[in-house]
Image (tube, rainbow over the protein chains, first blue to last red):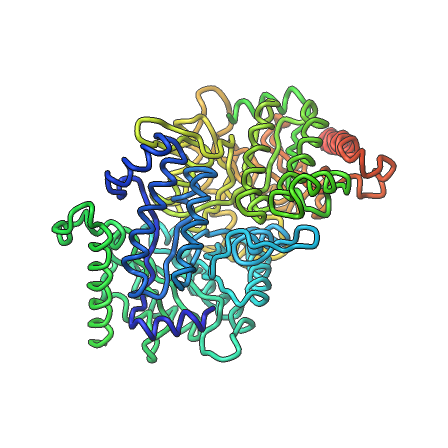
Length: 310
Length: 310
């Protein structure tokens, strides 16, 4: 799957992943109205609204980008109906041949981590049958519990040719509270980066430079990104924090390798709620999907310019 | 909710939480057969089997213990049907007046963490209505992302009188890879403990000694538990790792305060799959629930003796 991601980035010339993190306040009124008319102002109604909203965006951007990243929390908040909408979104994106990164930030130990891995990336055995639960292509994983939490995921990834992105240095303001603390002269995130490179060394695809154990490093920390790029030369970096969280194209160049690869930049509300920005207001609420398409094209240009100026 | 937990521990004389972490290999053949007969060897069949299995255990132990802790991964692996079984289990345990600790280990940032908090502990707004998604009483939370990941949870806890348990020192063998690294002369888990105490200071219930921001510290690390007990005097500690993972009654005493409170010990397969142990084999597979009840009684005795000998 990491090779497919790289190939699709090359083909689209867009190291971009669109974060499908629907909040009700982003969903156009007409979509909400239709969903509530059918299901009432219920969890089912909300789930239908975010699913229809997602579908519009996916249809509008699927030829431009290699990947999407649905944030499961935004679905889980609507309980079971929300998770059904998550699954529908994953399935639909895969039909459109998009690589799906499940932003699930799961992480536990031993058989529990294995259950998460099986549920999100692999197959679960029921009697003599095996079933996919959610079947994303990649999942994000929290490493606070150490190798015991990671290796059950890499085992399933190996079997299924899938991958993970491990949190290393997150994009949020307080990420430094623990991640920046100095251990033997170096911040925790560097030790985490070393560990990711180590886990990744055992997880190289047959042909390809990049491991299927990736890392998450926030666009909001470009200097740290530069260091981590060197520590993890064969690690693909998923970079959140572009756009709404303050990261800019110029901040991104250090996340890429000399081959112009090695990073994929996420934008969520900057794309999916583009129509709410002054810059794209001309599209109007009902043409939210076209606004998203325009925002993807602008983002692609912003990154290309930054990389050209490197 | 923390006051309810304390009151129920006092009433039952059992600082015990039963981990409802069903694996198919624990579920008696007769329950599997009945479920597969109705739903086939499908995800729905598996979900029905684990739900019926849980129900038997809950019925057998609900008068003995204050709380249960369903591990969501064990349900999530069965996709949507599994999560429906999770929700049924949560609802049923609450009907039986058990405190439900959702072992979900969620954690993200800002609006995303808020979505998890809303989905698991609070209500989500849909138009003019508000709905509970999963409605556990407590949730476990991963703190690697810092305060940005925690405060959205404490906000919802305050509104709903619920609580969280933050991972501090986990019970697994590799937990030391990061958690034990030395920062300014002290291991990371101690700094995490300090932070939990700090978060908790803003989250005290009106009457009661213990904050509704708790901590997770593994029974397998009693020495660390002793230190953390002192660092977090008003923090309730959820202690996994007893039984199957190797923790013993005598290891537990340091997790308690002088008032005999301040900790709740989890046992999962040691209770729910007790019938598979030699000690309880006499019950037989079909009487698995009675075996679980016997195991709870023995565990209560083991802890009481250890505390008496303190």
